[in-house]
Amino acid sequence: MKNDKNFKKEKRLVKSIGQAKTALSMLLHDSEKLNLERGISGLLDKLNNPKLDLLLDRYPDLLQEYDLEQLLSGNIEITDTKKQDIKTAGLLSCLQLLIHFCYELKENSNPDDNRFDSLRYILNSITSSQFINELLIIIVSVVGEDYYEKFQQRIQYFDFDLKKAIDLESNPELQEHIDLMVWFVLARLFLESVYTYFNNPGQNLKNMTL
Image (cartoon, rainbow, N blue to C red):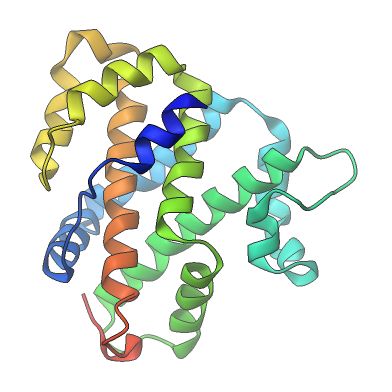
């Protein structure tokens, strides 16, 4: 996909731990958390792939057979299942879990150690740039490259600003897929924030709170 390479060269939305903490604080409010979760459901609806739903249900069992890194690589072969579907189910499962774990960290200053272990396991299984670019490929498969190019032009000068992302909803040229694209911007902001905040080598993960 030609936009994949261009996307990798875009400047990051989140450039510091302070920005990451601010973004997570906003995105993990009940209403925004619900928007992130609903966006995953909306993407699944647009993909309209019943096998993805089955894979999402099976993912806990698949994790007993394979490492998460293998499942996200797209190299695992499962009978009557496309490799891309396995990867897509893995990405969306991980996103759901990251939202859940980070919300628990925000609500509970002394979370169970298993939450930290699971969070670390996901972050160590795929890099931030890989996660975002793979998610982008899925998004572009739904909206089309021409639409995505128009959207990309609109956001190329964005800085760290949640309000600007939401204001895109009023742009008439982008109405067809605007809900999905605004969700992608927020999901990207969330992922960059999680990786920036929790992958800081100078801090002890278990001493970090939101």
